[in-house]
Image (cartoon, rainbow, N blue to C red; front, side, top):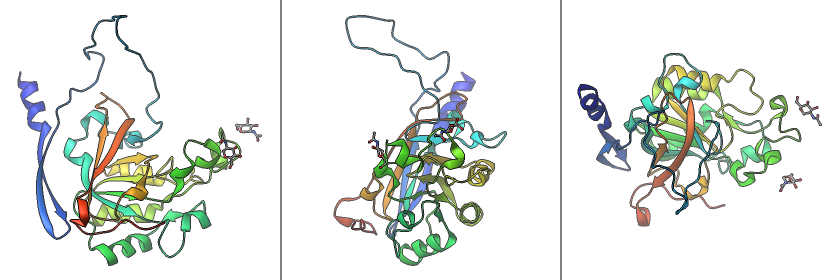
Length: 259
Ligand SMILES: *[C@@H]1O[C@H](CO)[C@@H](O)[C@H](O)[C@H]1NC(C)=O
Ligand SMILES: *[C@@H]1O[C@H](CO)[C@@H](O)[C@H](O)[C@H]1NC(C)=O
């Protein structure tokens, strides 16, 4: 009972976001049991449809828990629910100046890109979910296109954009961010062999999201993004329903870029 009470206390967090020019305070409440071996399943019954599925943790649109690359950091079910919600900050590598990702499949989001976002939209808001939109997800699920290679089983041949470690290091040290995400298979670019972005995020106890879809539908600023990851007990990652809310009629700042 004591344990239950503590879990319940952790399930409720109050988060204040700066939305456009107004502060919006929302309560974030976790209503989900941790999914472990004790999870309750309805007994089998052939009279209705009920399937089974099995999957590795890091596939499709999914979350990387901080523990994926750092010891003694949060596993999936330990990430406070308030850290899976936040103002969307979309870094449109695809639209800034030129289509950087199309010009260079090894492109990495730089400080310059973050500065350019802040020049237009102001300081990256507290709790931000910072997402790279490289346009790469239009190739999904063609592995040749998504991994940028003819040999999809050999990671040393992969070419796709990601974040530069210096930009993520700056974000972690100078801004209060909740999640970093990409529309490619990895927050580190395809040619990485040491995965420094994963390490920096893990050490900072910050989650990643990968293979995020349809980012063209999001304004660069003014949305709230939710990373609804399965509350997988001890998971290093898990599939997530990443979604966003925006205010109709441009109620907050930002407008969707035109392609
Ligand atoms: C994937 O993309 C490659 C490169 O454009 C193309 O040659 C191939 O036919 C595509 N595969 C599928 C299954 O569409
Ligand atoms: C692709 O990579 C795998 C794994 O390294 C290797 O065994 C295979 O020979 C490669 N295929 C080609 C066509 O290079």
